[in-house]
Length: 191
Figure 1 (cartoon, rainbow, N blue to C red):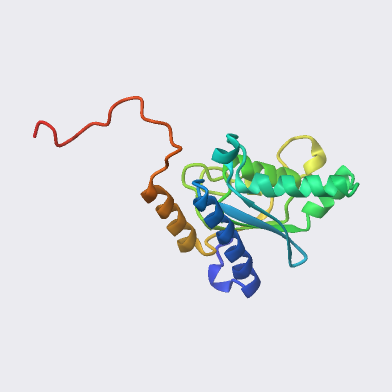
Figure 2: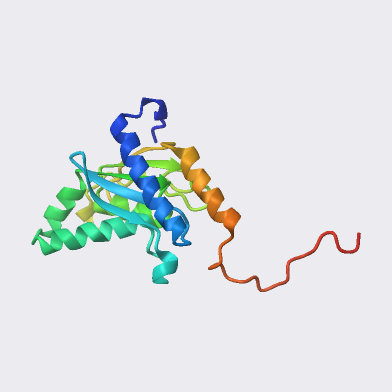
């Protein structure tokens, strides 16, 4: 994984800012604030934000939302499976938080070219924090092994902005979080 944050191009920062805007939309909708954009030839071709609460579907992470938008559009355009794979191999993803294991695996399988992300995902990260799925198997995604060929990763792009959104989310409290089954322990009682 590369960490050449100081070498960020203005395009990288511009695309990450768009991903941050998607994360803010997620935050405004009481979702965990993760957003992304997918770029082909310097143009944003899909955006995504977390929608797990809204859809009541735990797989609706920002990356999966953007991937599905493209697959549907390219299938409507009549592209074959190999043409879709070829298109993904030319795309870059900009996402505010390190892709989780599920998303990193999906990105490897579809053969995305490159991923830029903001903050690390110390609990579920699939690009080096927990697993290194971005390294792939070295084989083409159609090899049938489910591992994909991997992708280049650059971490730490606008990480402080991404962390700030997470802080805002957790400070406001998550009204959609399940209620604890056990009462919270009051450490000051009996002192």
